Length: 233
Image 1 (cartoon, helix red, strand yellow):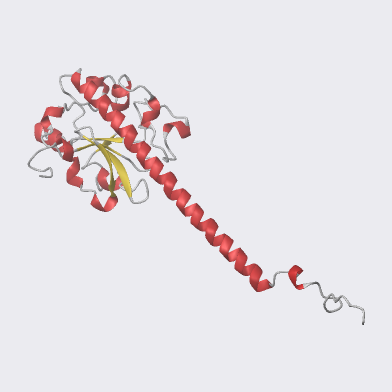
Image 2 (cartoon, helix red, strand yellow):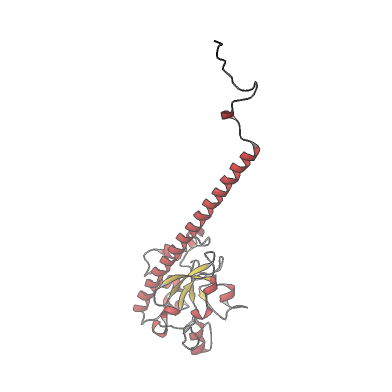
């Protein structure tokens, strides 16, 4: 009987089980990993943006409660445009009705007062993440001045509260307190208002106290009008 000989493959060549990746296999693995990383990043970014939108809507809801408390103690009046009538611009006027000034900061807003260390109650420049309706149709009708600093608007004048915006979001870097339709070369609706603060839309507070996210393409400038002759039906 001949002795059994153990073979180890060809001389100088490692066993097949220990063979190294070829260049094509290595590139394939790298491509798969990069694709998975991209998908994870996209899902993570989308989840973070959705969380920011939900938090922004929640903040606006709380500001809406503050607006109603303010109105209840001021003959149904909304905060005015100057300190002559309200003790400060709207952030200051509402501060006594908000438990936490962090509500003035929209999550995801790079210019929010928490991120920049600014004073949210500054009466000279708006350092919050929100901009208030200037009620230009009401002030223009009553005084002929569409940015009348002493205009008083009552909640009872808002005949369709679920269709009238009280607060929206300004563009990054803006210090405007009010969304004035006729101010500036194109009006604040073009130069100041940000209808896509969260990618494809922004958050709004309505006069009925509801807050919701609206796609930029669905935003209608008439939502900022109070008078029944101009506002949305």
